[in-house]
Image (cartoon, rainbow, N blue to C red; front, side, top):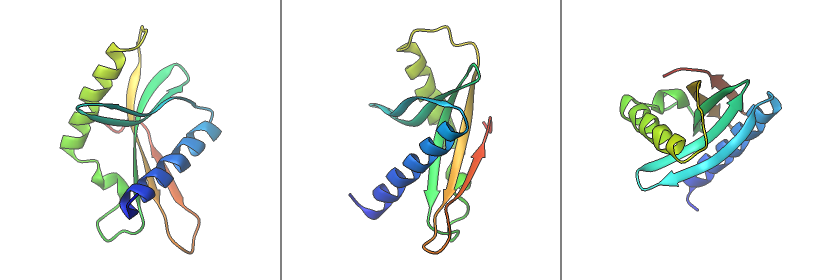
Length: 118
């Protein structure tokens, strides 16, 4: 596993633990289809949230959340619709979240959960 893949996997594990500790139920992790991948699908008080996790080890390329571009948001929306069609509904309330994780060698991870950001 390359450095970026390992960094991303570590970030997704931290995000899942963080969300679970906040009282959310992890419904699905790393759901894949030929069009892409959903990082996390969680249930939060009757809402199904599709969570994109972005992890960075520094701010040289901006914050992790800034990496969720317009094209990425559109792809996640399409993937969410595909995921929903495979599930037993009804799905009355959904939202799209981003969990931004900044890792450093000296400090604890900085985790920021941005709810309903797109």
